[in-house]
Length: 523
Image 1: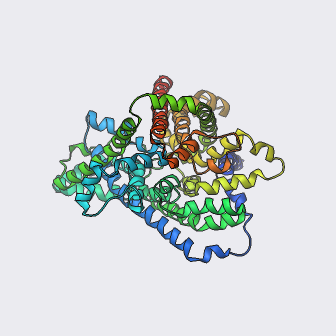
Image 2: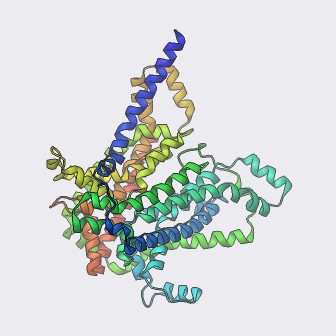
Image 3: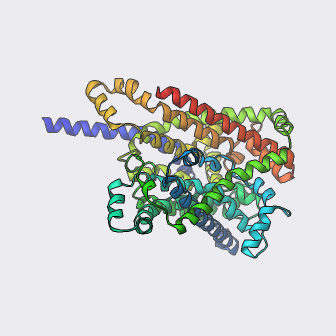
């Protein structure tokens, strides 16, 4: 009888777990899965030509170069942050994610100015490399994407460096010098996590749309949207996107499946004792170069935007001239953030420590899906009888942003879940046997800070979302990011700088509210 009761309890838990996972998978992967059903039996002739192979090879080279450079910068920056204490390192830990928060096409604008004809940075780079440096082309796109995405590598590398056992470090110091402990011990243990972050950067760079478009680099992601704009056929567009989709998903699966420690699966973060190790000179040089690039990735764009704007007037003009688009973008971003956080919350508990690695891989797959493909999938889904009226409203735009950004909410919630003492849940299981009471009085209050961060993270990324929005937005629902992207192509630099600065101020204000709410919730 007891065995039967236990079996029924386990079965009930599995069913309940599957039901909590179902909304996430339906929203994140459902539209693309529905689109795949529209594939025709034969491979279209356009996939067999030289142009698709050339674009795919260029996309691969761009993603590989950006991944390699971002891994070098991010791993070096993470080693510097983990190698000591102090106000500078605490400030770096608090702000290193900042480059991710600026839309990629807006970041590309700032780097075009930074690498202009009379730019001091361009002169320095030309002197170091011995070649001509241009703000356009494949090399510039590699640099911009690496400086935008390297925080992903920092996130993964710190997840491992902060959980190195002190006993391992101290035992190494007994038998070898500190420098040898770094090179032979610390770096080999942290390198797999940094490479996993680099593989994720590869996937994000592979499907990026904004930077190549701004820097005049034809890549495969742009071909997907061009094919759909020309033919209007979801099936042909899906065939066009399939090589890029398979390449990105394959890299993501390989990276996450082989990773021993990620920011959301592994042991809870506890600062190690690396600050006791003397850093060798070679490693100091690497750390210094990495941190110089990290500072440049934040300070360069902000300085360019301030100089381009010249005064607060362009920012105020951007708000006045684009108040309708700005209001719509904020409303869509807030709704997408709330919906994504609610959907991802029950899933985050299942991927947090000790974690389910297979489930994490499945839930992060949307990161490897090209943004235009998600847009095409939703356009195709919107043609289903009964959904056409909904597809012509702002609700469809909210759904598009949730489909695109659900993994961001999941990562934010799972990261916060790592900081919760497991004993609190064990105590709740003893003193509050009712599942409903446990959820209302224990789980939701504990998840409060993570929910705040998840909503804010999705809101910030939603404000700059472009690849899906340009395809899904109904007539009369123009967003701030699409208007900014169009202005950048017309060369309205002062107005565009004012709009980007407006986005920067919104991001800073959002995270100020986040820090305030988190401190109040934790009390």
